[in-house]
Amino acid sequence: LSTRLTETLAKLRTKGKLSASDVDGTVREIRRALLDADVALDVVKSFTAAVRERALGAEVSEALNPAQQVVKIVNDELVGILGGESRQLQLAKQPPTVIMLAGLQGAGKTTLAGKLAKHLRGQGHTPLLVASDLQRPNAVTQLQVVGGQAGVPVFAPEPGNGVGDPVRVAREGVAEATRKQHDIVIVDTAGRLGVDADMMRQAADIRKAVQPDEVLFVIDAMIGQDAVATAKAFQEGVDFTGVVLTKLDGDARGGAALSIRGVTGKPIMYASTGETLDDFEPFHPDRMASRILDLGDILTLIEQAQKAFDEEEAHRLAESIATDGFTLEDFLKQMQQLRKAGNFKQMLGMLPGAKGMREAIDSFDERELVRTEAIIQSMTPQERKQSRILNGSRRLRIARGAGVTVTEVNQLMARFEQAAKMMKTVAKGGVPQMPGMGPM
Ligand code: GDP
Ligand code: MG
Image (cartoon, rainbow, N blue to C red; front, side, top):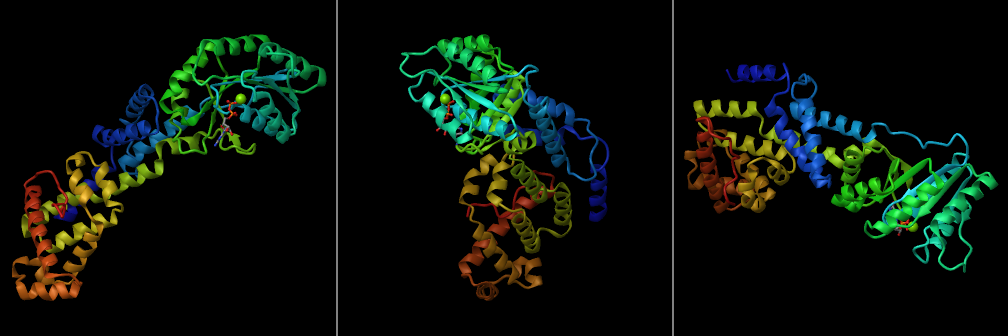
């Protein structure tokens, strides 16, 4: 009978559409992953709502279980959003192409100027770097160093001219490029630690003066939840045509990418991944999607949870308890199943409703599981089926066979009794609980 039930359930699952219960649990996990990755709450909300809509009513796949299927939809959607309208640099019909960099101080603009210059030079372009950051004393020198490394000339104001005018430098830089037939000009600008009106006005003035073909907003991926406010401020203050994410070599999960995309709609064009000029690449939406979702983790966790808490298994167990009672053999099987499921604590942690079990989880020792296995395996088949025959001398024999103390055998038996009681509740239709989860 139990195999027939299993088959029926299996059939039910491979037909029809994904149900709300299939979708919601997974969407909840996804929401948490996005928030962990520092995606802005509003963006998370609208994104998960869209995903839920798409997932509900999707045909159930034969190849994936519902949770995996939802994750796949999420991933596809995310790649779509991150990569939608992804494009190459827009080159001017009439050279030089003017690229202006904007962003907060320390975002990585000057470093990026060098990276971009080297990259473009490698493609056969003849870029000129223009030092329009006159705010920081070392900014011009820094650009000159970076230009030297990239093998690209730098246009800078004459030294000793007092405080220069960044707008004028930008304008003269572009004129110089035209004169010397550079086909691309990259204008480095000043930033502040926070968004401020002066800086924004200066950037907007430079923009007006040189009419760039591209304005790249450079932002540190580690900025986290501030990404939205910063991106909005630059969009309103300067307006930009594309985004560059920097410091992706750090451990930021990259939620900023999704936030910025969600809020500004502007394409992310490049990724900066280190301090040297070669740590630079075109933006890859698929890689960013996996990074944001930490897809590997989510998929395994979902699989683990499903393996261990398989509905069919619960039904099967309920039936077998109803007819034979819960035996030490069932107990062992459950233990082994849980062990197979991988990182036990982590799995428990992600289960809805597991919060109340936090203490038990924290005190749970996986070695305990190994010991339990050893003890039960030292029993005869008859002892496993009829635990009440386990008298003192049998327990002593088992303890020796398993290399544990009699006390430990007794403790296991106490836990088993407890689990058996829990299993009776399951059989009566209660919520499945994990055996062996008593205080240890
Ligand atoms: P700017 O103020 O926007 O011009 O920023 P800088 O280009 O001067 O960069 C600020 C700091 O961040 C420097 O120490 C850079 O070496 C470092 N930096 C820039 N981009 C990256 C990156 O992608 N990864 C890492 N790890 N550091 C970076
Ligand atoms: Mg700089």
